[in-house]
Structure formats: structure tokens, C-alpha cells
Length: 582
Image (cartoon, rainbow, N blue to C red; front, side, top):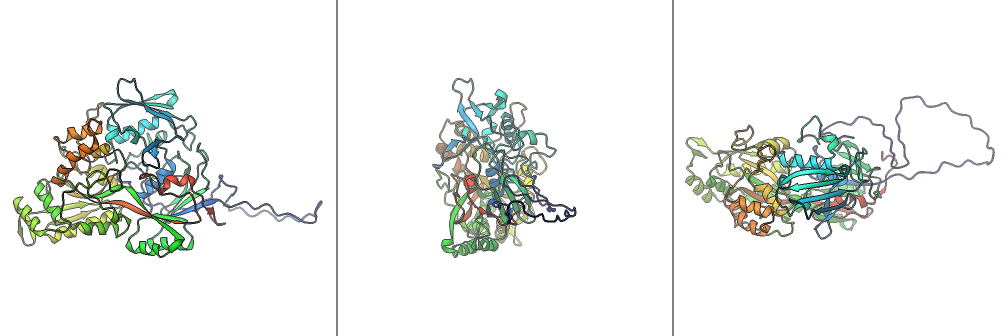
């Protein structure tokens, strides 16, 4: 059943096949009464056996947003991550030690071909691996993901896919040969969250919106049965076509309410667990529940940051960008985004790795955390501005910055509005705009600044954006700050990164890290000082949620690496649903 962004739910008649319960709706009159017949063998009549109610796990979550593509920055949310973990197959997944290991449920093998002319990886998919509509999970799904992630704007981690020259099908699509233009040591991070190409390739809507209505098929242990974004509820049930071990629970219910109701539902037992972004007050209320619950901080694979677009007219001068940073109150921006919740403890001080990632080391050169009016004045004067009437003017024009934040995410908007207030306090005019995530990441931030494309250079000076984490570090470096390459088959440049940043002197170092010629640590030591010097982005904090677990549900874990708790949902064991569960 498809999902919608904001679609009211009509009355629905459901037939549940995964458990022995049938619910039906009819307008027909009831059958006539039948006169009882005298017993023939026994003076008593036995009642039919009672069938057990389905086993379910009710999960409290943040507000359910529409848009469920786990590969786009616009849809990078806890909702899309949860649904992808439950329904989309991946070649590799994090092991308990954080290293990637082959998902043996989906794959027979994945290995580098030793005698290939070019760097080639051969994937062998299990014969029984199918989508929930019966179509095989096959090479076409690899091809589709490669084609989209190498060329579409606003995707989360394109660099590794842009190194691929060809994806070839063998043995009826169950063997896939992926050939790279150059060696790519991080190849195991590719082909996560495969999508059903046979249903999406010819979809009438484009890549940016093709999954706004959900996944048309599942390749995981659960599938969507019902969704109502107005009520804030998604019901998933066990996928009967899943070839792996069946999940012990029949269904998982995702239920979104405000934070106060989340706490009350956990107290009363209406929720078995909750995974959501809590603020300081909510954390205290959860702690007051005492031993009835267990609290675990769950880092998410994204770092919040303020992008300063050096290709914009207003911020083309590095002195102006540094003046903007000197005007910002960083702790106040972090407070605006986190509300004092779990993410506040994961403040970010590096340009590539997130605080919870292996190898993270602060690289920040000691920027001031609080506004420095003297520094603002000095830098803007050097850039040719003078203060008049409470504003900074150059050539008779005020310094007026446009700050963009996607309207789907309240925390992004709170940060943008706080930054605008701080800039105005220093005489820098600032306006907040809230385009859709698709518009911001798919059009405005990814346009070629040299091409004059509409929505590109000049329309957004700053943006509040997530920087993806959890992939291959060198690929994340190249995706976030590398110059765009060119598609070999079309000579068309790939989309620009969201920062609009390209340094031709740094690019050989970024390329060498991506292909393994130099270690990431060496490349980072050369690149990060330039990023800080050029005031490209101001990292704030790594996104994080709190997981609250009651004792009646078992098998729930925080998840390995940055996979999150829903990656363990195939092992969750809940309780029997109420009689009116459906």
C-alpha cells in the first residue's frame, strides 16, 4: 500500500493473512436466525477455540514526515531511516564491532575480481531473494541505484557511485559485475538500501518525488500495511514473501505524538518503546519514569551545519564569510537545534567525520563560540563595507543574506531563525526562506554556480543542512567538498556539492584519498585546515535521538554503527495486541 505526504485515511476493510484474524466490512443485512437443533451426541456445545491476537510492537516516534527516499538529503530523516531498515535490502551491514559485513540473507558473496582488467567487484545475489511482489532482487536494482546516485542532485553520498564505469548483469541478473574507472577501497559502502527498479524506473514522477508515496514493494522482513500521516501512524506487518527468518512479531506500529504524550504512553504501556528527539525537559520527564524504562542515546548518521555559499554574490569574499562566523553565537544555535537533548552532547568540531564515528578528531582551529563585534567590524571594513544607520553598506547596498532551511524540519528552521537574529544584532540583514527539501537540495544548492541556472548561485547565501555520516570517510570527503566530475558517457558534469565548494588545488588530494593512494587521515590533515580557513561550513552537532525501552519487549538494540535500532526489528518480540488492534 502506498504512502502519501498528507492524505486522510478513509474507512478501510482489511484482511490479515499473517495471523488467523479476519476483519471485514459490509453493508449487507445479517443472515436470518437459525433455530437451534437438539444435540445428537452431547448435551453440551463447545465454543470455538480462541485464536491468539497478533504480537505487535508499538513504537513512539517523531512526527512522521512525507518523503521516504533514504538516498536524498531532502528525505534524510528518522522516518526514512526506520522504513529503509525494515524494508530495503543492503549488500553490507555494520557488524557489532562497527566494521561492515556481508548480509548473508541477501548475498552469496561480494568480492573483488582478481584478474579483471579494471577494478571490478562481483556480487552474487541469492536465488530466493525477491521483492514482495514476487519480482527477483537482481542486477537491474544495482543499475538503477547507480544511475540515480551518480547523476541526481541532492543525493547523500554520490562520490563512490560516480567512480563506476559500468554495472553488468550475469546469470539472469543474479550475478552483478561492477567495474570502476579507478580503484575504490570503500566499495563495501555501496549498494545499501536497494530500490525496486522494475517499479520505479518508468514511474511518471522524477527521482526527487518517486518515493514520496512510499516503497511500492518490500525486500525486508516487514512491509507497510497501512499509513495515516494525519493521525501520525504507520502499521507494518510481517512480509510473508521474505525469504529470510520470519520476524517473531506480527506487526510494528509507528505512532507519532508530541513529547508529553510520548512520555505518558511509555508510562502507561501504550508504547513498548520510543525513538525520538527529546529536549531537556522531556529527558527529565523520562528519567522520572525510573526503573520502568531504559534510556539509550542513539546517534544518527548526519551532522547539522551552517553552509556559507562562497559562490553567492554576498559571500564571495572570504572576509565577509569570516565576519558572518564571528557574528554567530554557536552555543545558542546548538541550543536552538537540540533543545538541550541528547544531540547537545555530540557537538561537532570537524568538517568530515561526525563525533560518534571511528577516527573522529576535532580539527577546528579555535573559532570563537560567542559573537565578536570587534572582529565583525574589522573584517567587514576590510571587505569594503561601512556601518550606517545600523546596517553594513558597500557601494550603497546593504549586506543582506538569505538563509534557507527545509520547511519539513522544525529544528533546521529554528537554527536558521536564530542565526538570522544573531546576524541582525551585528547589523547584517538576514532573511529566512523555507523551500521544500526537494527544492533546496535538489535545485538551489546543487546548481552549477558557473552556469547561471535558475535557483542556483545568488539565490541562497547560507543554508542549514545535514552533512551525511557513516559511509567511507574518503567518499564522504569527496561528496561534501570535491569538485564535480564528468559523466564519461555524456560529458555532462555531475551536480555540485551542497556547499558549492571546489578548490582545484585540493582536488588531487581528495581524489587520491578516494582511490586509496593516500590514507584518509593524511588527506584530512591537508583539506580540513583549508575548509576552516575559507569559512565553508560551520559544524554544529551530530543528530541524535533517545531510545526509551520498556521491559515487556525484547530483542531491541541500539543498532551497530549508525544503523539505528530499527535495524534490529526482525528480532523484536512484543506483546499480544488488544482485541481492537486492527
